[in-house]
Amino acid sequence: MATESAQPAFKPSRNLEHLKPSATIAVSLEAQRRKAAGEDVIDLSAGEPDFDTPRIPAEAGIKAIQQGMTHYPANPGILELRAAAARHLSLLSGGRSVNADHIVVSTGAKQCLFNACFALFGPGDRVLIPSPAWVSYPHMVHFARATPVLVPGDVEWSLKVGVEDLEKASDQRAAGLILCSPVNPTGAVYTRAELKAILEWARQRELWVITDEVYRRIHYGSGPAPSALDQPDELLDRVVIVTGVSKTYAMTGWRIGFTVAPLPVAKAMAAIQSHVTSGASHPAQWAAATALSDERVEADVTRMVEAFRHRRDFVVSYFRERLPGVEFVEPLGAFYFFFRVDGFFSEKLSGATDYCGRLLAEQGVALVPGEAFGDHRWVRLSYAASEKDLEQAVARIAEFARSLETVGGK
Image: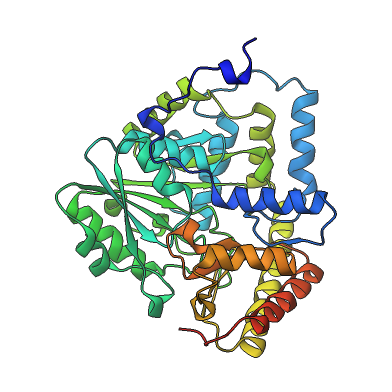
């Protein structure tokens, strides 16, 4: 085998010209490295529940393995899971009809999003993405050889966007929109009326809309968060809905997501993944089908959402009482707290990346800098952590704030 110095020079293909490693994963890895080195680190960067998968779906996955469900699964997903997903989504949206033939099961919601981008967008297309936005949306659009267009949200409106914002960012090349609600990284939630207005605008402009609803059940209002599925049929002709079991059921490692899309789009996405990954893990699909269909699992979902709500309330109250000059988005869903740090900027602290780097080095708290989401003035804290860790972490954040030359929130 050739030595490292004798290896031919690696020149990345044009497919990778916009590629950057995931900032959220990078922060988590650095926190793990420091922990392994013996440092006292509290990691609040994770984008996953800290709970174990509920017992009933976990046992269903084990049983599937024991019964030999370990072969190639059907693509676009086993019928049992697609039927369970259709029934589940129908119940969440007041009994509206959801056709299992329009559902494609993939290896996590991330692959669902990737498949949708590849099926809908291509060279020359521009895709609107409300900002701040999850780190992977722009990369997926770039992989499809399209151009992501970040549309800044209104700070007075929980950093959400409206039709006027989207219209200003549009032109003749605009082909689509990726919308997330509840929003990662802010925890903001679009109301039913706001979603309707955006979908009506997109329909008039003949844009495709991908709605990422993976956090829909983690909602601190009444019932699940508003969904595109709550809208009239005529507004869904050009809409792909992405969801899964990862966040609601603490099943991130099982890697099961699914989409609801117009039939031609669903078939195209299934064809794409048939050449990339084939079907998602067979036993994991059985576990997901059980999570969606066994009514006993709802007690676990309620318990986890209430725990997130309690943690959310604690973090919000702490910041209001101990850090009153720090602006933040009050989260109405998901498990993220997005707060502003540009009031601490100085010659020695030029952005959120610097802020997070020093916070980790000096106080042992890992957060994700806002640059990852398109805005260097903010940072993301995940309260998917134990109450003990949260209490210690926010106290350390307050101590760090006192150590800086504070000029107040801007």
